[in-house]
Amino acid sequence: MIPNREDLKLKRRTAFVTDERFFWHHAGTPVCGCDPADLNPETGNYFQATKHFENAETKRRFRNLVDACGLLQYLDTTTVRRREASDEELTLFHTAAYVKLVESMTSGGDAGDFAQFGRGSFNIAKLAAGSGIEAVNALLAPSPQIDNAYVLCRPPGHHAERDRGMGFCVFNNVAIAAKHAQQKHNKRVAIVDFDVHHGNGTQQAFYDDDQVLFISIHEDSLYPQGSGCTDERGEGKGIHDTINIPLPAGSGVGAYKYSFETIISPALKAFDADLLLVSCGFDASFSDPLGHMMLTSECFGQMAMMLLDSVKVPSCFFHEGGYSEELVPFCGLRVTEALCGLEASRVVDPGDEEANGYGYQALQSWQKQIIDDIYTSSAKPCIDKHPPLNL
Ligand SMILES: [Zn+2]
Image 1 (tube, rainbow, N blue to C red):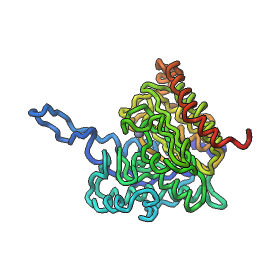
Image 2 (tube, protein in one colour):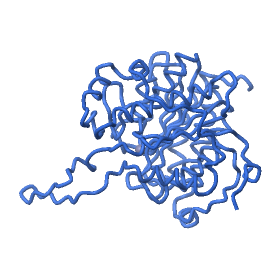
Image 3 (cartoon, rainbow, N blue to C red):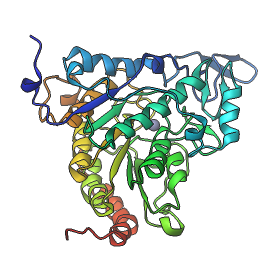
Image 4 (spheres, rainbow, N blue to C red):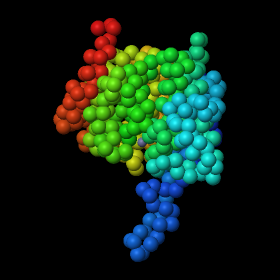
């Protein structure tokens, strides 16, 4: 029987923004610098071609699960217009020369470091950035039709820097959307990035900006290596408005929850932004091939809920990484359910029970020490800089 909206008890109006064209983006040849036919006995290369980690399947399966379980029909799929970002919008963050470079690669190419793309991806990347801008416009409209949004787009964006693509990212969708919210809507923005990799491009965009709070929680020294250390805290008037939480490999539900409770939620409350943007990657899941963390899909839903409870402002989640075909759909569903305000899911994640029982899921003493040190060095100065009005 098809459930109705009342049965599902949706408390918030959520836009689900996606487009078939996002799934047509091609991320180029496979990983780690290995070409598809890298066979050379002289040099010892015996690499059999694989599917690229950043392919359409994880995201299609996410969208399909939201549909199959009956939720999609109650999400708003029409309010947010999908359209390509203009050159003027892309250059809110990127250099004009970089935009021209990507445009010139009509047959595809490499936008920088691990940022390959195929024919047509310039337009698809512009569609991702433009749809994010439109989600922000819809959320900040005088009489908004939606409370929050999930933008299920490709290519992802958070690694893309001002003048180069990086880590499967071509244009920085979140940074462009935040710049747009600042300049067209005069809003202060908080950005939380819980992709397992550091959001280096987004950090670069707002490093000296005291109108944007950027918090990245990620695996320590994964990608880009040496980026996202605790001593990166902003500069100039933006000092302490960047918070990095590099967790040791193997961190699980306990370490993430403790980080959210002690650092992310208090900093968000203190900064008191008008708009929350989230770089939503699922590669900290226990079965991800590119990360070494242990999160369950249930934990992703709880993290999303904690963010929404911390700041009662319009919120937009942007899809970033996440490469487990099996688990990304369940992680994505849990976050979408959280956006809708659903307390309990009707959908069983077959992997949750076993993963919850893994050793080291609980907060470990050495993890607590690291997180407490980050609170002292990074979060407390931010909170002191923006004392909450209601304290
Ligand atoms: Zn990632």
